[in-house]
Length: 147
Image 1 (cartoon, rainbow, N blue to C red):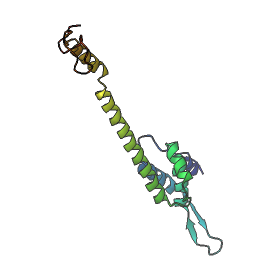
Image 2: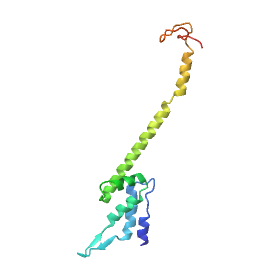
Image 3: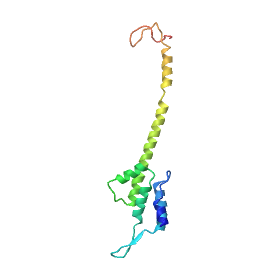
Image 4: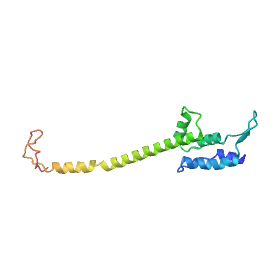
């Protein structure tokens, strides 16, 4: 009974892959002996895979992935199908995170507002006040003006 309680209280570590978590669960489940005799034919039936699937789902550290899994239309997934589902979701989240991180770095690197503002101000200082503006036709802010 202690081994089963331990199994059901196991959780997915933050930096652990779902396959590693599954391996830890399998090791603990091996001690538990999830078998029952069929009342009709008296054959021994092993239901470890079903227990592992449920414990894996409950122990996932990402609540969004857990909710996606629980909300999936296929509620009869095998343990392997659950592994594939979770791995795909984790890979998608990693890719999205990397994409957002790289976009944030690009945005920070390309944010030259102050630098461009200073350059524009310096360029305005080089205009001649006696020349005619090529855009508006007014005199006083031509190319070589000194503000």
